[in-house]
Image 1: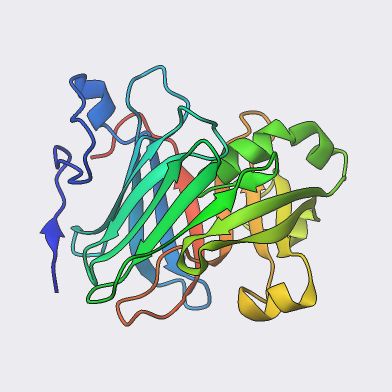
Image 2: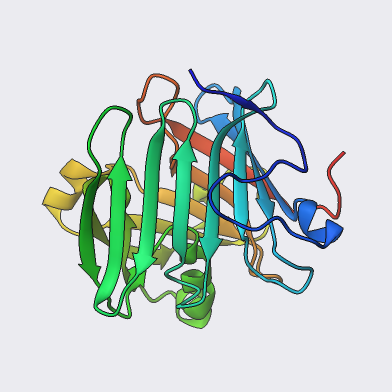
Length: 245
């Protein structure tokens, strides 16, 4: 199994340029992921900006309980905040994912260790959402969601080389974890019965700070598989520190 030890100055290894500003090497978001039922700590997400002025993450590193880097991802938003171009590698099984903006749409690629690369081109639409672009998509439709209206989207699932139609809607605060006392609580559900059978059954639950519009909690299926390659249900709590010791 290919592992790499995490350090704050680790190069991403995915073609990104190392930041020259030391500030950019400090994580601006930290996500602690726990197994949903047992609350056992699974991994940590460390999000980095390209500069102090940036409002989105340019790099995300996922580290396990031994502080070993298990997944690395870079994101580039020149086309749209909702549809970033991404490069991701899972060092546990050499699985690679990428999206690239083209004139006609978005090229998506997926490759597991020992298997040929699979790729396809996805048609671009105003509802297309890729990876962390979901966060920007929520803020873009913030007023509609606060008012209780359902927002539709087409969320890219790279392993399927396809999108899933989703509905995002406001729900009762009780649906979020009890630790959340005040937030905009949202559910994300796939649209259509066949979509439910092929992606996820239980809705995803997200909590956003009403004042800052920042994601503070996520409940549902993880975007990372476990060490055996199985899906896992997680609870992720997000912090926005100036510095992580």
